[in-house]
Each structure stands twice: as structure tokens, then as C-alpha cells.
Image (cartoon, rainbow, N blue to C red; front, side):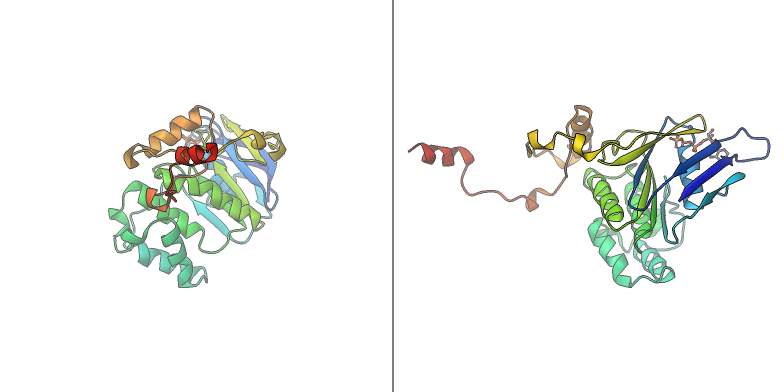
Length: 263
Ligand SMILES: Nc1ncnc2c1ncn2[C@@H]1O[C@H](COP(=O)(O)OP(=O)(O)OP(=O)(O)O)[C@@H](O)[C@H]1O
């Protein structure tokens, strides 16, 4: 898909929100769109998804199936979460099981009967994410997908991105907090005051993964979000968040095992 000299403004006399954007996204590519508040990231993503049309220039060769996750899921609709996802699955010629699979994976099962308007912001965001993935997207566009998500769902986002790109889809994701900026092989697009600049991809080989070890820690559920943010701020990679019941506890204490070794 190609941005071919794209200009956009929201009204005839309004300032340009995006000026002469030129860039290409290849199948299987991840693009992280970075930039300060108001720079034009959402505008760029909506142009990519086809939600907005360029005032000048064109977006060419957009894949047929586009998954679009807006910054805020429009929950003001007269459906339950399940009713909405099943209806979206029908519209997209996906089997009803596609809705069920994402409900399960995103932990939405207890909210299926809840009207969309009564969902919390984070749960509504999950419904927004699920609807975009009902059919495998050739282009997935995620606008700040972490906003409002709990720590466990947040760690799913990079996995989903990897699955989509692994299947040959392209992903565009905006990220003003740098949560996904460390994704290997992601190209960075930087938007500043309506101007797009394409930066080089970060090669996977530059990560010193062989020198890393995994440290598993347990924190109270209510402190999980904060712990993830603080660990990332300290330069650590957070690989996942899971329920303590899913954690395999060994019968023996590791130090006890060492005692035996000594004997
Ligand atoms: N619906 C709209 N009508 C008029 N102006 C808009 C609209 N949406 C965005 N703008 C303006 O376009 C410019 C770019 O906004 P945009 O939302 O694309 O920025 P952003 O980088 O995504 O910001 P944020 O990180 O705060 O979401 C801003 O000046 C904004 O005020």
C-alpha cells in the first residue's frame, strides 16, 4: 500500500493536518507511527484505513480486508457485545466461531450479554479489537491500541501484530507511549506537525537476546498495569502477563533441589 503525496485537512480553510505524506507499506511489514499529541497520527491512520479520503494525492493498493481499531471504540450502539460481534462476523462472511474465538482469547466471555454502551472503556476497546480481527486482515490499523486495556490484554497486542504480519498482513500502529516501539523489524514513521518522516527498520539481529534471562515475578492484580509500565520504563522487556493459576508451581523449592545436589 502506498501513500502517494497525501494531503489532508478537516475543513476547507482549516490548517493541513497532513502534508504531502509519501510512504510505502509492504505485506508482512509492521509500521509504528510515533509522534506527539496532535501531530497527525490518527489522521494518517484513518487515511490508511480508508476512513478518511485524501484532499490531495491518493492512498494506492490498499489490501481488500482492512481491520480498523479506532482510538475509542464507538460503543453507543444498540447491541450486546456478543450480538455485535456475531453480526459483524456475518457481515464479513466469517463463521460465528470467529467471534467466539476472539471473545475467548480477549477474556470477553463474562461481558457477552452486556450492552455495548454499558461496557467499561477497556472492555469496549477489546470488542473493537475483536471486530477488526474477525477475518484475517490484509491491513490492520491500530490507533493507540493499549489505551484502557488491562496488562494482560496489552501483552496480547504484540502477539496479534506478529500473527497478522506472519500471515502476510501489514500492520500500522500508533503509539505515543513507546509501548511497541521495540518490536523487532518494525519500521518507524514519525509524524511531526503534519509532516511524515520514514525511519529505518530496527533489525531483529540487533537485540542481544542470547544474554537475556527470564525473571518471573508475581504482583497483586491491581498493581499489574503499573508494574508493566515501570518495568518497561526501566528498560526491561515484558514478555507476558498471566493468571497465577496458569503458573506451574514446582513441588520442590529450588533451593531444596540445590541442597540435594550438594550431597
Ligand atoms: N475531526 C476533526 N476535526 C477537526 N480537526 C481535527 C479532527 N481530528 C483531528 N483534528 C486536528 O488535526 C490535527 C491532527 O490530529 P490527530 O488526531 O491526527 O493527531 P494525533 O497525532 O493522532 O494526536 P493524539 O496523539 O492526541 O491522538 C490536530 O490539530 C487536530 O486538532
